Image 1 (cartoon, rainbow, N blue to C red):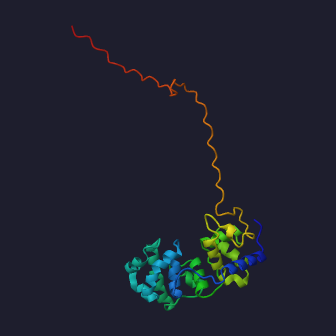
Image 2 (cartoon, rainbow, N blue to C red; image 1 turned 90 degrees about the vertical axis):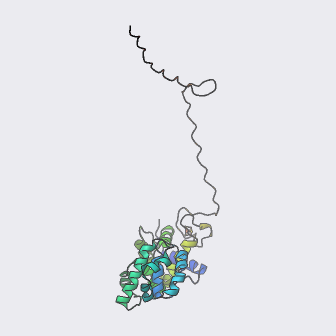
Image 3 (spheres, helix red, strand yellow; image 1 turned 120 degrees about the horizontal axis):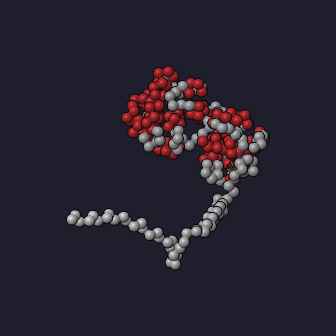
Length: 259
Ligand code: SF4
């Protein structure tokens, strides 16, 4: 795959920006703390599923103090529709407590401090830094990983490689929103199973080799089954295989009557 130029990357972002001039996260949140919680809950879950659960949760607990006061049982009741909720419940309570104990109840702004919170990894830290504090970070999730690789913009074997590749190639003036443009492009057009290349605004710039150029691509013909080999078994007149005669049962010899 040839290396993509910065000029091509610029054209890609100009087109993505034209398609979605004001991109933003689809996770619902009220403040930096609820954003941290929403992102921590969203691992291996859909934004829609998380939003359903947090709608009522954030009405009663939108600060670390209120969240910690809920305790495991009550918090679990709010989030048990989300995958891996038991672990996530523990992490949300632990991170709330840590924010109270070490950060005065405020969400810290640096990557190191954010990553020190239970359940917060590099991806979550990047989302919080970007969305809550306006930092030009790229949080590589499954969609960005796929788009970065397929387009040839930032090929990489793992999320960190893709993140660093994107940071190098994305022009500075697009960095702030690049993360959202790529996520939304991956979620709605460059889909995992069947990318909708026929309506993709960057189709001519993308280097993916297996583009899908029609919503109804012709079905591949199934290979015909190989002809059966002629059998050498003898057949009866009725065409059925000849049955072997059952072996005769050995009968015990009758003893001669005693004289
Ligand atoms: S052309 Fe297809 S593979 Fe390339 S970015 Fe667009 S949807 Fe994805």
